[in-house]
Amino acid sequence: MIETHCATLFPTVAKQGKGGIKTEAYSSRINISLNELRKHCRAAISAFSALEHSGSHASQRLCLEKFLHECQGASMVLWDKNDRKLGKYLRSVISVSNSSPLSPAAFSGMKAAIKGIEKEKTEGVGKTEGIENTEGIENTEGIENTEGIENTEGIENTDRTEKSEDIENNEEIKKAGEIENSPEIEKAFRNKKKQGLSEEELDQGKSASFLYNTEAKELTYHGNTYKILPLFLAVRDLYSSLPLFEELDACAEQLEKDPQDATALFQKAVLMYKARRFETALQLNAKVLKIIPEDHRVWYNKGVILSELGLLEEAIAAYDRTIELEPSFEIAWDNKGVVLARLGRFEEALETYDKILRRYPEYAEAWAGKGSILSALGREDEALEAYSSALQIRSEYLEALTSTGSLFSRLGRYEEALKVYDKALHLAPEEPRLWAIRGFVLLEMGKQKEALENCNRALELQPGFAPALEIKVQILSEIQRQKDKTFK
Image (cartoon, rainbow, N blue to C red; front, side):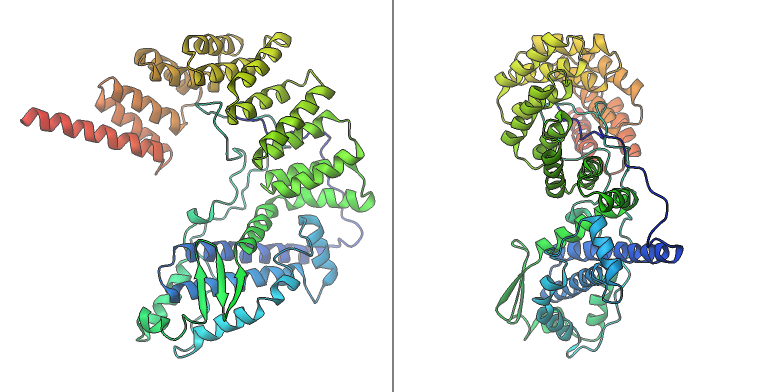
């Protein structure tokens, strides 16, 4: 079960024409600065990923130097000494505060460490060529910019009670551990080794002054400790905001005219949510509530944001307030049921769905939600009835179909599960998860060849898709077991 995302319930803020300071020349400078920020952020994220996977003290030093150098580069763009007006404008649009870990004030405390690390890099080994480029890092500028984060009821999930960690309409920054290591960092490290120094020799005499704790993500340099994680999170947040710059700029223009413009604040909160900057989104949403405290839509968005932050009890309170203000706002009822299920309060979740279904018996999502709760409670027959009710209302409701198939499979009713998954694949033939699940059902039916074909199809659609790989291993193991049995 998944919560519906924030919806743009106020009108989208229209982009204003070029005026004021935004001459053609100034717009060009803005674009140059944005490109510089993208470059620095990508390189910093890559270096941080390499840092997390670096095996030696010397490679850690290189990665840290690169990371801090790129963070400092981003800071210099945002606090441009040569054009303070431009820097202030960029920070305002992207919501970067003066207390940010990227601020010059925050960096001033790190200067000694940065200079020391740079000095250590060159001492005794000569100056290594610059490692400016970070080829191979995926360009994540294409964060999907759907209009206003609308209701994504069609997103599939076999278990509606499962927490949805990822916003499906965002393909933004991947987790640091998943971003490819920078080949230039590795190249620089190899260059040092070519100069005749082993890793051990590179480490000798330096380890006492420099230490990086991978678990705590802290740098200790000459007895002083510097927290690296907040710096990375600031860069990640900055990078995820850049694809939304034009829309954020429209909000900024409106807020410059009227800081109490509820529509612009609301829209900016939604954009921050899209960038997965949930704390900032919550702060902006709070400002909107001060202006229009009785608007159920703003309370609803607060519930969604709190849920993303894992503040589930507070999210329930926000949904309750939404329902109090507008009892007919069905999505709030549905999301409340989701959160209650995440807390393991299944009976309360069931009661919530029953309440909304008494009001709106044609609400398919509520029937599907009720089905998932009943399934979690072990009331499988009732769950199947609830899923059936959802599909009677919306025959092409993919989530209800996959939940039905999953339950049939769990009950060992594989023929019925197969028929349901066939219907689902007719609706979403390019969905790798459905092909992988169908492969599992075929494996359970003893049809290894067909099962393997299904898993291979899933992997064609999404190479490296983990569930398909796991099922494929099971299939190949079973095929081998059958062969061994035949030859005995």
